[in-house]
Length: 517
Figure (cartoon, rainbow, N blue to C red):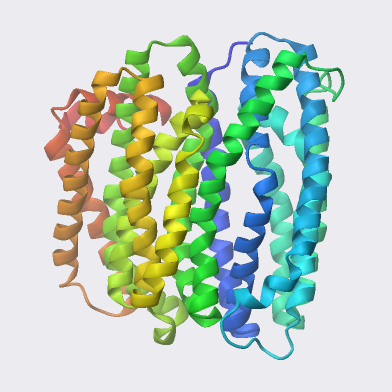
Protein backbone atom coordinates (compact mmCIF):
# COMPACT_ATOMS: atom_id res chain seq x y z
CA UNK A 1 0.00 0.00 0.00
CA UNK A 2 1.49 3.35 -1.06
CA UNK A 3 1.30 5.96 1.71
CA UNK A 4 1.51 9.70 1.04
CA UNK A 5 3.96 10.59 3.81
CA UNK A 6 3.78 14.36 3.47
CA UNK A 7 -0.01 14.49 3.20
CA UNK A 8 -0.52 12.25 6.21
CA UNK A 9 2.07 14.11 8.27
CA UNK A 10 0.48 17.50 7.52
CA UNK A 11 -3.04 16.20 8.22
CA UNK A 12 -1.97 14.55 11.47
CA UNK A 13 -0.12 17.70 12.49
CA UNK A 14 -3.11 19.99 11.82
CA UNK A 15 -5.56 17.84 13.76
CA UNK A 16 -3.01 17.17 16.46
CA UNK A 17 -2.20 20.85 16.87
CA UNK A 18 -5.85 21.79 17.18
CA UNK A 19 -6.44 19.20 19.86
CA UNK A 20 -3.21 20.06 21.62
CA UNK A 21 -4.17 23.71 21.84
CA UNK A 22 -7.42 22.61 23.41
CA UNK A 23 -5.42 20.34 25.67
CA UNK A 24 -3.23 23.26 26.72
CA UNK A 25 -6.09 25.59 27.65
CA UNK A 26 -8.12 23.07 29.64
CA UNK A 27 -5.33 22.01 32.04
CA UNK A 28 -4.79 25.67 32.89
CA UNK A 29 -8.44 25.92 33.79
CA UNK A 30 -8.37 22.61 35.69
CA UNK A 31 -5.27 23.49 37.70
CA UNK A 32 -6.75 26.89 38.55
CA UNK A 33 -10.03 25.35 39.70
CA UNK A 34 -8.27 22.64 41.70
CA UNK A 35 -6.19 25.20 43.59
CA UNK A 36 -9.09 27.52 44.34
CA UNK A 37 -11.75 24.83 44.91
CA UNK A 38 -9.71 22.06 46.57
CA UNK A 39 -6.30 23.47 47.50
CA UNK A 40 -2.66 23.30 46.46
CA UNK A 41 -2.03 19.91 48.08
CA UNK A 42 -4.69 18.23 45.96
CA UNK A 43 -2.94 19.52 42.86
CA UNK A 44 0.37 18.14 44.12
CA UNK A 45 -1.26 14.82 44.97
CA UNK A 46 -2.76 14.60 41.49
CA UNK A 47 0.68 15.15 39.92
CA UNK A 48 2.30 12.63 42.26
CA UNK A 49 -0.05 9.77 41.41
CA UNK A 50 0.11 10.54 37.68
CA UNK A 51 3.89 10.15 37.80
CA UNK A 52 3.81 7.10 40.06
CA UNK A 53 1.34 5.29 37.82
CA UNK A 54 3.48 6.07 34.79
CA UNK A 55 6.17 4.03 36.55
CA UNK A 56 3.71 1.16 37.01
CA UNK A 57 3.07 1.34 33.27
CA UNK A 58 6.55 -0.08 32.75
CA UNK A 59 4.80 -3.32 31.84
CA UNK A 60 3.58 -1.71 28.62
CA UNK A 61 6.84 -0.14 27.58
CA UNK A 62 7.84 -1.51 24.22
CA UNK A 63 4.67 -3.36 23.26
CA UNK A 64 2.84 -0.52 21.53
CA UNK A 65 5.86 0.81 19.63
CA UNK A 66 7.06 -2.66 18.65
CA UNK A 67 3.64 -3.67 17.34
CA UNK A 68 3.11 -0.50 15.31
CA UNK A 69 6.63 -0.79 13.88
CA UNK A 70 5.95 -4.43 12.95
CA UNK A 71 2.85 -3.34 11.01
CA UNK A 72 4.66 -0.91 8.70
CA UNK A 73 5.92 -3.60 6.32
CA UNK A 74 2.75 -5.78 6.08
CA UNK A 75 0.65 -2.64 5.51
CA UNK A 76 3.02 -1.49 2.77
CA UNK A 77 2.61 -4.87 1.02
CA UNK A 78 -1.09 -5.46 1.92
CA UNK A 79 -0.31 -8.59 3.95
CA UNK A 80 -3.73 -8.92 5.62
CA UNK A 81 -3.06 -12.22 7.39
CA UNK A 82 0.05 -10.93 9.13
CA UNK A 83 -1.68 -7.72 10.24
CA UNK A 84 -4.53 -9.73 11.78
CA UNK A 85 -2.08 -12.00 13.57
CA UNK A 86 -0.23 -8.97 14.91
CA UNK A 87 -3.48 -7.55 16.27
CA UNK A 88 -4.24 -10.83 18.04
CA UNK A 89 -0.81 -10.82 19.66
CA UNK A 90 -1.24 -7.17 20.64
CA UNK A 91 -4.60 -7.95 22.30
CA UNK A 92 -3.15 -10.86 24.26
CA UNK A 93 -0.18 -8.84 25.45
CA UNK A 94 -2.35 -5.93 26.59
CA UNK A 95 -4.59 -8.22 28.61
CA UNK A 96 -1.53 -9.62 30.36
CA UNK A 97 -0.14 -6.12 30.90
CA UNK A 98 -3.36 -5.03 32.61
CA UNK A 99 -3.04 -7.90 35.08
CA UNK A 100 0.64 -7.17 35.73
CA UNK A 101 -0.03 -3.47 36.36
CA UNK A 102 -2.88 -4.35 38.73
CA UNK A 103 -0.77 -6.77 40.76
CA UNK A 104 2.25 -4.44 40.99
CA UNK A 105 -0.05 -1.55 41.86
CA UNK A 106 -1.60 -3.45 44.75
CA UNK A 107 1.79 -4.59 46.04
CA UNK A 108 2.98 -0.95 46.04
CA UNK A 109 0.22 0.27 48.40
CA UNK A 110 2.24 -0.04 51.68
CA UNK A 111 4.96 2.24 50.24
CA UNK A 112 2.69 5.21 49.46
CA UNK A 113 3.39 7.17 52.69
CA UNK A 114 7.11 7.30 51.81
CA UNK A 115 6.34 9.23 48.62
CA UNK A 116 4.84 12.22 50.44
CA UNK A 117 6.90 14.66 52.52
CA UNK A 118 4.92 16.10 55.43
CA UNK A 119 1.25 15.69 56.26
CA UNK A 120 -1.71 15.49 53.91
CA UNK A 121 -5.08 17.17 54.46
CA UNK A 122 -7.18 15.25 57.00
CA UNK A 123 -10.09 14.70 54.59
CA UNK A 124 -7.85 13.06 51.96
CA UNK A 125 -7.74 9.26 51.87
CA UNK A 126 -4.55 8.69 49.90
CA UNK A 127 -5.24 4.96 49.49
CA UNK A 128 -8.72 5.41 47.97
CA UNK A 129 -7.45 8.05 45.55
CA UNK A 130 -4.55 5.81 44.55
CA UNK A 131 -6.79 2.77 43.95
CA UNK A 132 -9.13 4.82 41.77
CA UNK A 133 -6.19 6.06 39.68
CA UNK A 134 -4.90 2.49 39.45
CA UNK A 135 -8.30 1.28 38.23
CA UNK A 136 -8.28 3.90 35.47
CA UNK A 137 -4.82 2.75 34.34
CA UNK A 138 -5.72 -0.96 34.31
CA UNK A 139 -8.98 -0.42 32.43
CA UNK A 140 -7.14 1.53 29.74
CA UNK A 141 -5.36 -1.72 28.81
CA UNK A 142 -8.31 -4.08 29.03
CA UNK A 143 -10.78 -1.97 27.04
CA UNK A 144 -9.79 -2.51 23.36
CA UNK A 145 -6.49 -0.58 23.65
CA UNK A 146 -4.94 -2.79 20.95
CA UNK A 147 -7.30 -1.28 18.33
CA UNK A 148 -5.25 1.93 18.33
CA UNK A 149 -2.37 0.17 16.62
CA UNK A 150 -4.04 -0.36 13.25
CA UNK A 151 -5.06 3.29 13.01
CA UNK A 152 -1.65 4.56 14.09
CA UNK A 153 0.23 2.27 11.70
CA UNK A 154 -1.85 3.68 8.82
CA UNK A 155 -0.78 7.21 9.85
CA UNK A 156 -4.35 8.19 10.74
CA UNK A 157 -3.64 9.66 14.16
CA UNK A 158 -6.08 12.41 13.22
CA UNK A 159 -8.93 9.90 13.63
CA UNK A 160 -7.83 9.02 17.15
CA UNK A 161 -7.46 12.73 17.87
CA UNK A 162 -11.04 13.43 16.74
CA UNK A 163 -12.46 10.75 19.02
CA UNK A 164 -10.24 11.84 21.88
CA UNK A 165 -11.27 15.48 21.66
CA UNK A 166 -14.96 14.54 21.87
CA UNK A 167 -14.47 12.34 24.92
CA UNK A 168 -12.17 14.93 26.48
CA UNK A 169 -14.86 17.59 26.11
CA UNK A 170 -17.25 15.31 27.98
CA UNK A 171 -14.66 14.60 30.66
CA UNK A 172 -13.58 18.22 31.10
CA UNK A 173 -17.15 19.50 31.28
CA UNK A 174 -17.98 16.88 33.91
CA UNK A 175 -14.88 17.59 35.99
CA UNK A 176 -15.36 21.36 35.82
CA UNK A 177 -18.90 21.02 37.12
CA UNK A 178 -17.71 18.65 39.86
CA UNK A 179 -15.02 21.11 40.98
CA UNK A 180 -17.31 24.14 40.93
CA UNK A 181 -20.53 22.71 42.35
CA UNK A 182 -19.48 19.63 44.37
CA UNK A 183 -15.76 20.16 45.19
CA UNK A 184 -15.27 16.41 45.49
CA UNK A 185 -11.96 14.94 44.31
CA UNK A 186 -13.26 11.36 44.37
CA UNK A 187 -15.99 12.19 41.84
CA UNK A 188 -13.34 14.07 39.84
CA UNK A 189 -11.34 10.85 39.41
CA UNK A 190 -14.44 8.68 38.87
CA UNK A 191 -15.37 10.84 35.88
CA UNK A 192 -11.97 10.16 34.29
CA UNK A 193 -12.45 6.39 34.72
CA UNK A 194 -15.86 6.42 33.03
CA UNK A 195 -14.73 8.60 30.13
CA UNK A 196 -11.59 6.46 29.63
CA UNK A 197 -13.85 3.46 29.03
CA UNK A 198 -16.02 5.46 26.61
CA UNK A 199 -12.94 6.66 24.70
CA UNK A 200 -11.53 3.15 24.24
CA UNK A 201 -14.86 1.77 23.05
CA UNK A 202 -15.31 4.66 20.60
CA UNK A 203 -11.82 4.23 19.07
CA UNK A 204 -12.38 0.48 18.75
CA UNK A 205 -15.69 1.12 16.96
CA UNK A 206 -14.04 3.56 14.53
CA UNK A 207 -11.18 1.13 13.87
CA UNK A 208 -13.67 -1.65 13.06
CA UNK A 209 -15.52 0.63 10.67
CA UNK A 210 -12.41 1.95 8.87
CA UNK A 211 -10.59 -1.38 8.64
CA UNK A 212 -13.26 -4.10 8.85
CA UNK A 213 -11.04 -6.74 7.27
CA UNK A 214 -8.52 -6.57 10.12
CA UNK A 215 -9.58 -8.86 12.97
CA UNK A 216 -7.46 -10.28 15.80
CA UNK A 217 -7.00 -13.79 14.38
CA UNK A 218 -4.35 -16.14 13.09
CA UNK A 219 -0.87 -16.92 14.31
CA UNK A 220 2.50 -15.42 13.54
CA UNK A 221 5.41 -17.59 12.53
CA UNK A 222 7.90 -18.51 15.23
CA UNK A 223 10.49 -16.29 13.55
CA UNK A 224 8.16 -13.25 13.55
CA UNK A 225 7.11 -13.86 17.14
CA UNK A 226 10.72 -14.17 18.24
CA UNK A 227 11.67 -10.96 16.41
CA UNK A 228 8.77 -8.99 17.92
CA UNK A 229 9.51 -10.25 21.42
CA UNK A 230 13.11 -9.22 20.91
CA UNK A 231 11.98 -5.71 19.93
CA UNK A 232 9.70 -5.53 22.97
CA UNK A 233 12.55 -6.61 25.25
CA UNK A 234 14.87 -4.05 23.71
CA UNK A 235 12.23 -1.33 23.94
CA UNK A 236 11.49 -2.18 27.56
CA UNK A 237 15.04 -1.52 28.69
CA UNK A 238 15.16 1.49 26.40
CA UNK A 239 11.97 3.18 27.55
CA UNK A 240 12.42 2.24 31.18
CA UNK A 241 15.03 4.97 31.33
CA UNK A 242 12.64 7.47 29.75
CA UNK A 243 10.06 6.74 32.44
CA UNK A 244 12.65 7.16 35.18
CA UNK A 245 13.68 10.53 33.74
CA UNK A 246 10.06 11.61 33.33
CA UNK A 247 8.83 10.48 36.74
CA UNK A 248 11.85 10.69 39.04
CA UNK A 249 11.69 14.48 39.34
CA UNK A 250 8.07 14.46 40.53
CA UNK A 251 8.58 11.59 42.97
CA UNK A 252 11.75 13.05 44.47
CA UNK A 253 10.21 16.52 44.83
CA UNK A 254 7.20 15.05 46.62
CA UNK A 255 9.30 12.83 48.88
CA UNK A 256 11.92 15.47 49.83
CA UNK A 257 10.31 18.89 49.30
CA UNK A 258 6.58 18.25 49.78
CA UNK A 259 3.33 18.50 47.85
CA UNK A 260 3.17 22.31 47.90
CA UNK A 261 6.57 22.70 46.22
CA UNK A 262 5.56 19.96 43.79
CA UNK A 263 2.37 21.86 42.92
CA UNK A 264 4.35 25.06 42.25
CA UNK A 265 6.87 23.22 40.10
CA UNK A 266 4.13 21.40 38.20
CA UNK A 267 2.45 24.73 37.41
CA UNK A 268 5.64 25.81 35.64
CA UNK A 269 6.18 22.41 34.08
CA UNK A 270 2.59 22.41 32.83
CA UNK A 271 3.43 25.34 30.55
CA UNK A 272 6.71 23.75 29.45
CA UNK A 273 5.02 20.43 28.80
CA UNK A 274 2.29 22.14 26.77
CA UNK A 275 4.89 23.59 24.42
CA UNK A 276 6.70 20.25 24.26
CA UNK A 277 3.37 18.62 23.43
CA UNK A 278 2.83 20.90 20.44
CA UNK A 279 6.21 19.94 19.00
CA UNK A 280 5.55 16.28 19.84
CA UNK A 281 2.51 16.44 17.55
CA UNK A 282 4.88 17.20 14.67
CA UNK A 283 7.12 14.31 15.74
CA UNK A 284 4.20 11.90 16.03
CA UNK A 285 2.80 12.90 12.65
CA UNK A 286 6.17 12.26 10.97
CA UNK A 287 7.25 9.03 12.69
CA UNK A 288 5.62 6.56 10.30
CA UNK A 289 6.72 8.64 7.30
CA UNK A 290 10.32 8.70 8.52
CA UNK A 291 10.13 4.96 9.15
CA UNK A 292 9.04 4.48 5.55
CA UNK A 293 11.78 6.80 4.29
CA UNK A 294 14.45 4.93 6.23
CA UNK A 295 13.42 1.77 4.38
CA UNK A 296 13.25 3.14 0.82
CA UNK A 297 15.80 6.01 0.78
CA UNK A 298 19.61 6.09 1.00
CA UNK A 299 21.52 6.79 4.22
CA UNK A 300 22.81 10.06 2.79
CA UNK A 301 19.28 11.21 1.94
CA UNK A 302 18.04 10.32 5.42
CA UNK A 303 20.95 12.13 7.05
CA UNK A 304 20.18 15.26 5.07
CA UNK A 305 16.55 14.96 6.16
CA UNK A 306 17.75 14.76 9.77
CA UNK A 307 19.66 18.01 9.28
CA UNK A 308 16.53 19.68 7.93
CA UNK A 309 14.39 18.41 10.81
CA UNK A 310 17.05 19.67 13.22
CA UNK A 311 16.88 23.09 11.57
CA UNK A 312 13.11 23.15 12.09
CA UNK A 313 13.40 22.15 15.76
CA UNK A 314 16.12 24.72 16.43
CA UNK A 315 14.00 27.38 14.76
CA UNK A 316 11.10 26.49 17.05
CA UNK A 317 13.25 26.39 20.18
CA UNK A 318 14.89 29.71 19.30
CA UNK A 319 11.42 31.25 19.69
CA UNK A 320 10.26 29.20 22.68
CA UNK A 321 13.33 29.61 24.90
CA UNK A 322 13.21 33.45 24.81
CA UNK A 323 9.47 33.25 25.49
CA UNK A 324 10.15 31.12 28.57
CA UNK A 325 12.84 33.49 29.86
CA UNK A 326 10.77 36.64 29.42
CA UNK A 327 7.13 35.63 29.78
CA UNK A 328 7.14 32.82 32.37
CA UNK A 329 7.20 34.99 35.48
CA UNK A 330 4.63 37.66 34.50
CA UNK A 331 2.31 34.93 33.21
CA UNK A 332 2.63 32.86 36.38
CA UNK A 333 1.99 35.97 38.48
CA UNK A 334 -1.14 36.69 36.44
CA UNK A 335 -2.30 33.05 36.51
CA UNK A 336 -1.48 31.78 39.99
CA UNK A 337 -0.49 34.85 41.96
CA UNK A 338 2.81 35.93 43.48
CA UNK A 339 2.64 33.41 46.33
CA UNK A 340 3.05 30.47 43.93
CA UNK A 341 6.01 31.90 41.99
CA UNK A 342 9.36 30.12 41.84
CA UNK A 343 12.66 31.98 41.69
CA UNK A 344 13.80 33.27 38.27
CA UNK A 345 16.93 31.03 38.06
CA UNK A 346 14.49 28.08 37.96
CA UNK A 347 13.09 29.59 34.76
CA UNK A 348 16.59 29.69 33.22
CA UNK A 349 17.09 26.03 34.16
CA UNK A 350 13.77 25.13 32.53
CA UNK A 351 14.74 26.99 29.34
CA UNK A 352 18.01 25.04 29.10
CA UNK A 353 16.16 21.79 29.82
CA UNK A 354 13.62 22.53 27.08
CA UNK A 355 16.26 23.10 24.39
CA UNK A 356 18.12 19.90 25.22
CA UNK A 357 14.87 17.95 25.51
CA UNK A 358 13.67 18.88 22.00
CA UNK A 359 16.95 17.96 20.31
CA UNK A 360 17.02 14.70 22.23
CA UNK A 361 13.39 14.02 21.24
CA UNK A 362 14.25 14.43 17.55
CA UNK A 363 17.11 11.95 17.81
CA UNK A 364 14.85 9.52 19.65
CA UNK A 365 12.26 9.92 16.90
CA UNK A 366 14.77 8.65 14.36
CA UNK A 367 15.80 5.83 16.68
CA UNK A 368 12.17 4.69 17.05
CA UNK A 369 11.36 5.11 13.35
CA UNK A 370 14.47 3.11 12.45
CA UNK A 371 13.74 0.41 15.02
CA UNK A 372 17.32 0.27 16.36
CA UNK A 373 16.09 -0.59 19.85
CA UNK A 374 18.45 -3.49 20.36
CA UNK A 375 21.60 -1.42 19.93
CA UNK A 376 20.13 1.44 21.97
CA UNK A 377 18.46 -0.63 24.68
CA UNK A 378 20.79 0.19 27.59
CA UNK A 379 21.37 3.89 26.92
CA UNK A 380 18.05 5.27 28.27
CA UNK A 381 18.26 2.96 31.27
CA UNK A 382 21.75 4.15 32.19
CA UNK A 383 20.67 7.76 31.58
CA UNK A 384 17.62 7.29 33.81
CA UNK A 385 19.64 5.71 36.60
CA UNK A 386 22.20 8.54 36.37
CA UNK A 387 19.35 11.06 36.55
CA UNK A 388 17.78 9.39 39.58
CA UNK A 389 21.12 9.13 41.36
CA UNK A 390 21.91 12.80 40.72
CA UNK A 391 18.38 13.71 41.83
CA UNK A 392 18.80 12.02 45.19
CA UNK A 393 22.21 13.63 45.74
CA UNK A 394 21.63 17.14 44.40
CA UNK A 395 18.21 17.65 46.02
CA UNK A 396 19.98 17.47 49.38
CA UNK A 397 22.17 20.49 48.58
CA UNK A 398 20.33 22.59 45.98
CA UNK A 399 16.70 21.56 46.34
CA UNK A 400 14.62 22.19 43.23
CA UNK A 401 17.64 23.49 41.28
CA UNK A 402 19.35 20.16 41.85
CA UNK A 403 16.32 18.27 40.52
CA UNK A 404 16.23 20.15 37.20
CA UNK A 405 20.00 20.31 36.71
CA UNK A 406 20.38 16.58 37.36
CA UNK A 407 18.01 15.90 34.47
CA UNK A 408 19.89 18.29 32.19
CA UNK A 409 23.30 16.84 33.08
CA UNK A 410 22.22 13.21 32.64
CA UNK A 411 20.73 13.94 29.20
CA UNK A 412 23.57 16.15 28.01
CA UNK A 413 26.56 14.08 29.14
CA UNK A 414 25.21 10.53 29.19
CA UNK A 415 22.15 10.13 26.96
CA UNK A 416 22.76 12.31 23.90
CA UNK A 417 26.39 11.39 23.10
CA UNK A 418 25.51 7.71 23.36
CA UNK A 419 22.40 8.13 21.19
CA UNK A 420 24.35 10.00 18.50
CA UNK A 421 26.93 7.23 18.45
CA UNK A 422 24.20 4.61 17.97
CA UNK A 423 22.47 6.55 15.18
CA UNK A 424 25.64 7.24 13.21
CA UNK A 425 26.90 3.67 13.41
CA UNK A 426 23.64 2.10 12.21
CA UNK A 427 21.48 4.53 10.22
CA UNK A 428 23.64 7.37 8.89
CA UNK A 429 27.13 7.54 7.38
CA UNK A 430 29.48 7.46 10.38
CA UNK A 431 31.79 10.16 9.00
CA UNK A 432 28.87 12.63 8.96
CA UNK A 433 28.66 12.84 12.74
CA UNK A 434 31.24 15.65 12.65
CA UNK A 435 28.95 17.65 10.38
CA UNK A 436 26.02 17.12 12.72
CA UNK A 437 28.02 18.12 15.81
CA UNK A 438 29.17 21.24 13.96
CA UNK A 439 25.54 22.06 13.15
CA UNK A 440 24.53 21.59 16.78
CA UNK A 441 27.37 23.80 18.08
CA UNK A 442 26.25 26.60 15.76
CA UNK A 443 22.58 26.12 16.65
CA UNK A 444 23.27 26.10 20.41
CA UNK A 445 25.25 29.32 20.15
CA UNK A 446 22.50 30.84 18.01
CA UNK A 447 19.75 30.03 20.53
CA UNK A 448 21.89 31.39 23.37
CA UNK A 449 22.51 34.65 21.50
CA UNK A 450 18.89 35.32 20.47
CA UNK A 451 17.73 34.41 23.97
CA UNK A 452 20.18 36.90 25.51
CA UNK A 453 19.26 39.67 23.08
CA UNK A 454 15.55 39.08 23.66
CA UNK A 455 16.09 39.12 27.43
CA UNK A 456 17.83 42.50 27.47
CA UNK A 457 15.24 44.04 25.17
CA UNK A 458 12.40 42.74 27.36
CA UNK A 459 13.99 44.23 30.49
CA UNK A 460 12.62 47.57 29.28
CA UNK A 461 9.10 46.14 28.93
CA UNK A 462 7.50 46.35 32.35
CA UNK A 463 3.92 47.64 32.30
CA UNK A 464 0.77 46.01 33.64
CA UNK A 465 0.93 42.22 33.47
CA UNK A 466 -1.25 41.63 30.41
CA UNK A 467 0.42 44.34 28.31
CA UNK A 468 3.86 43.16 29.41
CA UNK A 469 3.08 39.57 28.42
CA UNK A 470 1.73 40.56 24.99
CA UNK A 471 4.61 42.90 24.08
CA UNK A 472 7.26 40.48 25.32
CA UNK A 473 5.70 37.63 23.32
CA UNK A 474 5.80 39.78 20.18
CA UNK A 475 9.45 40.65 20.78
CA UNK A 476 10.36 37.01 21.44
CA UNK A 477 8.74 36.00 18.16
CA UNK A 478 10.24 38.76 16.02
CA UNK A 479 13.86 38.73 17.24
CA UNK A 480 14.59 34.99 16.63
CA UNK A 481 12.89 34.99 13.21
CA UNK A 482 14.86 38.03 12.08
CA UNK A 483 18.13 36.48 13.18
CA UNK A 484 17.28 33.08 11.66
CA UNK A 485 16.84 34.68 8.26
CA UNK A 486 19.91 36.93 8.59
CA UNK A 487 22.27 34.19 9.77
CA UNK A 488 21.04 31.09 7.88
CA UNK A 489 19.57 32.48 4.65
CA UNK A 490 22.65 31.43 2.66
CA UNK A 491 22.53 27.89 4.05
CA UNK A 492 21.41 25.14 1.65
CA UNK A 493 19.85 23.23 4.53
CA UNK A 494 17.82 26.29 5.54
CA UNK A 495 16.64 26.93 1.97
CA UNK A 496 15.55 23.30 1.55
CA UNK A 497 13.84 23.43 4.97
CA UNK A 498 11.88 26.51 3.88
CA UNK A 499 10.79 24.70 0.72
CA UNK A 500 9.51 21.76 2.80
CA UNK A 501 7.60 24.09 5.11
CA UNK A 502 6.23 25.96 2.10
CA UNK A 503 4.87 22.76 0.51
CA UNK A 504 3.55 21.41 3.81
CA UNK A 505 1.66 24.62 4.65
CA UNK A 506 0.23 25.37 1.23
CA UNK A 507 2.74 28.07 0.20
CA UNK A 508 2.54 29.92 3.52
CA UNK A 509 6.33 30.40 3.42
CA UNK A 510 6.38 31.70 -0.16
CA UNK A 511 7.11 35.23 1.10
CA UNK A 512 10.32 34.02 2.72
CA UNK A 513 11.49 32.16 -0.38
CA UNK A 514 10.56 34.98 -2.76
CA UNK A 515 11.77 38.09 -0.96
CA UNK A 516 14.19 37.13 1.82
CA UNK A 517 16.33 34.29 0.46
